[in-house]
Image 1 (spheres, rainbow, N blue to C red):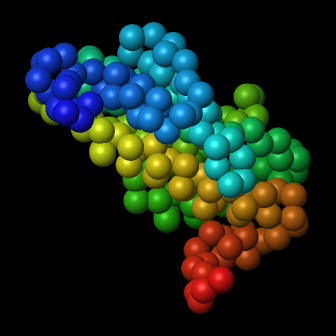
Image 2 (image 1 turned 60 degrees about the vertical axis):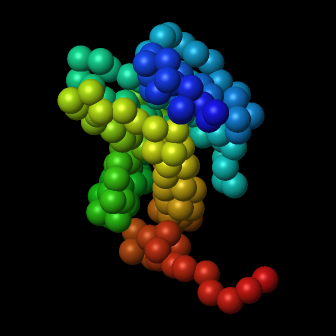
Length: 167
């Protein structure tokens, strides 16, 4: 019996319970902050991402926030914000923002489960993997714009370029 089948049989489905099961399965460091919230660390190629998922029963929304530290020079903030606009145009789900006071780059997504809908294990796993995939994809572009003195257009080419061939 899979974890999702167990939850379906027990009629006590809680999205954060599913997230906790996934975190254990992937051996991610995690902390069940509250009944409706979990925080974990997911290792990527470029860095370790802090991911928090929170369930709001009132909104019937599972909210994901994926963050990583970024401390761009103040004079590069306009270029970073321009890069964020370009990035968000390329994201099908979720969006990036920069929290200046906390010095954090943030990817956010809200999965609306209105009407008693249930998020399954595969759906939540995709939610988390998409956040990490987007952070990994656009991290180099953000770095090139803020530290590499590259234009936004040039830096975004790194994010949209596809590798061809075999290693």
